[in-house]
Image (cartoon, rainbow, N blue to C red; front, side, top):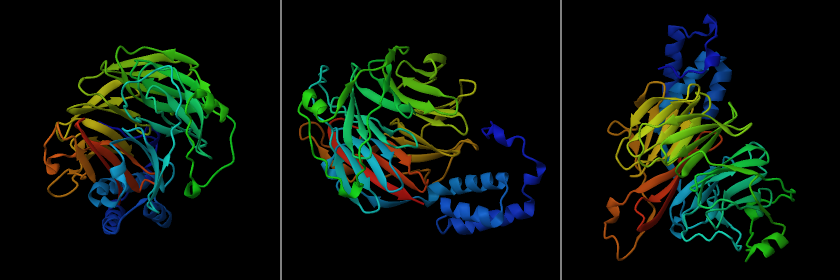
Length: 433
């Protein structure tokens, strides 16, 4: 199976690596990798040696293969005791990561200064009363501009748009009848949301920009008791531009494929649908092989493949042909809770807390140590309900509900908490290599 980029097919023979140069290159990489071979080193090494495109790809591939064995936990957030189960995360830059929790808290952690603050979610009266607090499942910004921050609201059926320069809530997106599980910007001021009510909805997110603030000095503590106060403070309630329902069951995740101008949606009806964002018609629908616990979706735009996590497998879809090309058995049987790509490497966060790495090109798992193919982070804080469970702490692993790389590709945020609903707890950590 060949997942290489089509743009590389027409390279000349001059780009081929000679056997002697290849051996010198690999020897140098092995020595360098033992000293933390990161993205900066790769760029410097490329400039010094004037590597060809093929050499760059080989170098990047080799570095990625070494990455899992070099990953080390650098920092664990010391205030996780104040939160319950991290469901979503998003890097604002190379230092600051945002996290959304099951208890509906949105926080920003400066991983270099080890400082943290809560971003206030607005209070308001809602026409849609939700009986359950399902938490924040999605955090995103409007592409490279990063002028808007979009996240779940106090009511899980709504979404909030912040002015990222001031961290003031500007828009409340109201229209879903059930929890919102995902959202993706498809342009500077257009966002699409996916919900448990089986629909996706399109929204305009235009608002007037404000003066910027510093994250280090942020102390926004205003709350809004109901809609009239929210609107009086400059907020606006928005309804969707339109809504589509093509899935028969809840929509669990959504991804934007900017290369093809497509939206992918994953549903509990065991399908992945590919939508044309120009008219929001469904271009194709892929029937999945495995149907239990379909909760996460990720796209690798360079390879044009999508990964879907389920209870016992991770299924790979070729987006060019809309067909399933691989079903990868999971390392354990607690389900895939998060999936992420880093070039040709797919990382999988499991319900038992395993973080595993799969080489898409070679179609095999990458050893982390000589004894194991995974990392097993330990939870920093666990609280058991007195009347439900009496499990010892060493038998309670944190499910990895979210994990993603910072923009530099050198730091990996891993977050989660106990898989069992009757147990509260929280885990969050930074890994580097």
